[in-house]
Length: 469
Image (cartoon, rainbow, N blue to C red; front, side, top):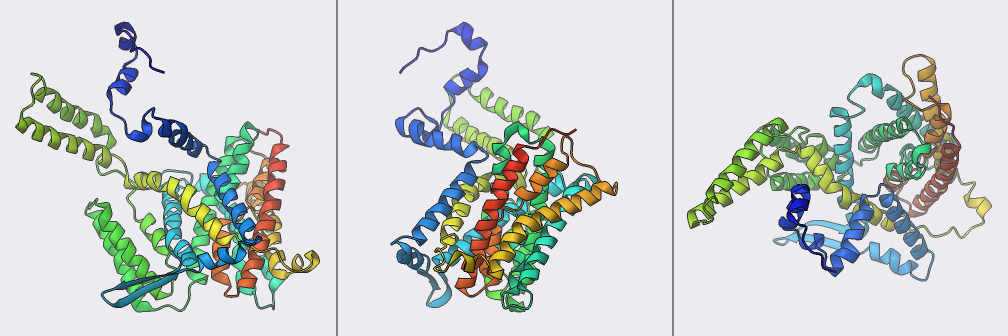
């Protein structure tokens, strides 16, 4: 329905409205039918913090349904579809679709995780060691105790190498649980969980790098290191072209893949070397931007724009665009650009490719007593809770740290249990730990079972936690 433009008096009092009427918008921001009814509602949904967890959960359910339906064979066969890369008659690479998701696309997931870790180390909770002491100690406890519980269940058995599976917290699901509780969970408890999860991710990355890489080909490892060092040097001399780093990143990924070290770790390396500060100081932006805008205004004062002035305007506007870009830090820019694709594309695709667990064709009493299932599930539920709560409680009791504002022991217990939700990285480690698909399925069963119990119990504990100052 058309509306009349505001009168002059209204326009004077609403400059932002004037700008929005004058500025040109892309097609997806217009009031046309498809953008209005499809794209814009999706954008609003993606802005909701719990949406990513919902999409991942739906992908997980879809995988479970596919793996336990007449589509099971087609589902498994689809992910084993081979993809080959040949160049000039030289065979370079062959991956299944499953490996493309786990080894290639998940590199972007680890790149984003690495960017988040660096942001927290430079600007966030991990910048101040004293403020970060409690979640760091708690995270270490939350990694060590689950691993020990898994070892206790599997000591002397053939599947001991799965000890790293219950160490990881899935931040998307854990944050979704806390967000769903709204103001019942104090901000301090939420920040505690976020910081703990960041340290947890860093620990998982180190475990993957050290313990879950194959036999190492040092020549290829040297090529990967050269790619990272080259990228680091280019950042120091202020080379800003994204394509240069993409090419180096792809070369580093291929080299790591050939070296035996898990290729996704190239994303971690490139995330950590991404500059955290803008090339141009933000406090200089207003003066430079004003000067550039004044140049355009001056050329258009007579209402006539010559061919030469068109060219000058084009140059000035490109400078204005460059100014805006370079006043943002590459770390922030890349994190913002990657986040929606990882959260709503790569991780749900990973869930759909990896969560297709056929229901065990044996009695419940048999699979639920399997040491792998028990080691993972108990490690996630009890190991995370005891490790995080115990380490944090002892640290506070010793006077080395204090609880965040508004957070008390009841909140700590709920957060500790919620941190037992392990999904994305836990499944990732399970695929690395075991070559036998049947054992991988048992590990996934333990992950799903333990994560479900941790999510429900953590929600209830936080739901009925009292406010504590």
